[in-house]
Length: 339
Ligand code: ADP
Ligand code: MG
Image (cartoon, rainbow, N blue to C red):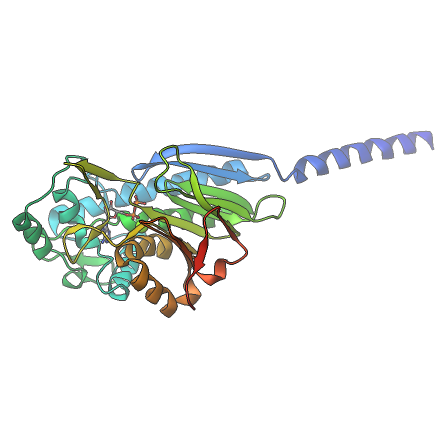
């Protein structure tokens, strides 16, 4: 009898020991990697975190190798060099989304902006303020409507002198893909930070929402302007402070307005998109930045179901879509957009 009791106690000890180890939801691992021209931090919680992180890293690196304009062997570099290609399914899917966004934003989101990106020196940091003639020459080669693309086969042919850059949409796609793979690997709680793009998987291990900071565009120490509490969402920010150069006292940022061929000057200093769809969020953060407050508000009103947004104007005013009431916090007054 004593023996049985002892065995039962030992069993109970091991059983509870194992259970508490497996259930410790706070256990986490992080990895850092440099890809897509930025430093990324991926953090995952729970028992399957290690393999999930490895899969996420491999996926991001695979997409970077396909999309990078800095790598002459990438699919996009080869397409830009030869003028035509048959893209892999992922790259074709991404170009398809970029084309949709181009139509939907009346051309403001335009991946054929690459000749302008190069001209201004944002590709190799060889910064240059172009002359009007140089700008018009680059703009004459732009237009997503001028490339031929079959989403079914992935076959794409650029118009003469065209080249494309999926940089404004690629990180959102990569974080969304990485999050999906991590979920499939059994992780239900993870935070992926890809430069200004944050993708949350599930909620915090204790079940509470993630609290995601949106940077103060004027803080040199990386201070925050506001925070949003979210579950299972991408929070993607385009800010003038992310990549820019200063020449003769004027600041030029890397988000270019296809209508002028110049850096966007829309009165906004930061646009964050909160959405289930990371690819959309990345594209829209760039496009709404160019639109400015009024047009961005109109765009949101006609696409209300697909995203929420936080906009910080050049004068410091903070605007948010009303769906964020209760989940956004800031020490600055918040003005909600009219529905
Ligand atoms: P980041 O990549 O720094 O997060 P964005 O997502 O806003 O910022 O993307 C900006 C990048 O997209 C630029 O560096 C440039 O390569 C490209 N780009 C600039 N203007 C446009 C535009 N109007 N449409 C599409 N891509 C653009
Ligand atoms: Mg973007």
